[in-house]
View 1 (cartoon, helix red, strand yellow):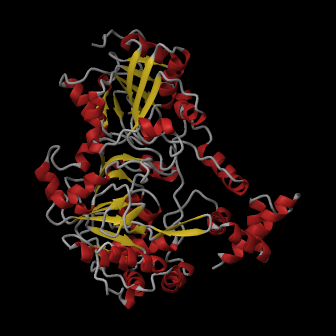
View 2 (view 1 turned 180 degrees about the vertical axis):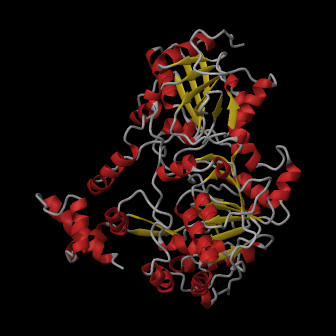
Length: 626
């Protein structure tokens, strides 16, 4: 058992008389070790809610003292982006400084990347920042594969004795908000109150967090220790919104046609989520334009009308797109007085600002709750959840999908983990547990690397995240494949119809060899022009008119940075041959081009390398000009 002692420091405010408060993370780390002894099992929230200073202090103590055993159980360790190539550094350097200056890096992550984290410290993540740890055997071996709803039991099973979290106090200092990460903390505290767990609960305050009430709010007495020093408050990790490509917009337009008025919505972070959000706003506010684009794309979904009753959100992650949907009048259906239930959030600086500046009444419509509430029906209040989650559409993204409908979302066929399953399985399972719900897996039909384009629709793959017996709806930029309850042969034909036509022939032959489709089957003519050129013909003019913008909901990137992005994307995906062609071709030095060259430090090149970069950039800008 962990020894409990009376407070030895002055209380920080009303209601804190039973809480030991500190203004120095090192002293707090020493107090924790004095209580637990030298075996520490530390649980940290996923993503934004990590108490960086406190966690770093504990790691520093364990590095300095090899007799300390420190096991960290967490997910999604956020890291400031690091540019690789010279052009990328020229572009990202000022962006990184502007958006991430002052954010304290996690010492354990830096040490892991350098191969210097001592053996007495173990970091177990159940969800990784996408692709960050592909080259780390140690983290690949330390990964724990878990549905988000199973993480609580695994942490308890591991014998957690310290739970630490970033929090924000109310003005009186009598209550605290878990803000971005109710996550699994309320359930951990419930287990402690019931005697099923015995751990120290430590908070680190940060005034930048939005104060979220309801189940995210707790009494000060829940804490054992508190790090409360305004001088240590750091800027929240705030990744900029991603640019939305024409393919992403096409996916959004298709997916929006599947979402019924009066229904329930779950979407994820990233450009596809923003594309879906934008398509829903377009459908609601500019219905004529939405219908015209849907017709040009040959959208097969039937839900095209504006929203009368509106949508309610039930989403593991409160993505900032939900705020845009509330502002647009799309999300307006309330369930138990709430517009959106979410388990955690992460987003841009503007997202955090909007949440902080909302009126108390408006903010109360966004309920941050334990992940167990949004991800599972059977964790309590099942009758109310079922009544609220009517006509639900749970939309998740995948890296690949097989011809028989399985989704590959979190790993590679050699066993390496890209990210993690998170809550994706939970929402797929909910879609089958609810009477009128559907699971939608959205993915781009292709990906490109080093000038080579590959299909994301594959015959089969050596790793899957969602098995084919849970196949439901798959959406690519080329259409909607409705797979639920269909035979394997029907599923294969539907998946071929949404694959890129450059790969349909090979995929069809693979299916025929496997006996999964008739030997004389031919792909219908209507689906044999699934190409980027067709998307451009259908949507290019709308892009030029501003109907399908690169950043539908605003951006932290400057106007010049935004105009650079398509050209830099072209250079990133080009192989050696493509780069040579761009360098030989070059491009005109327009006023816009000069702005971009100046931003990249290439307006007056000084070296041969600079002159080459300048020519490449001009060629790429000419190649992506509208």
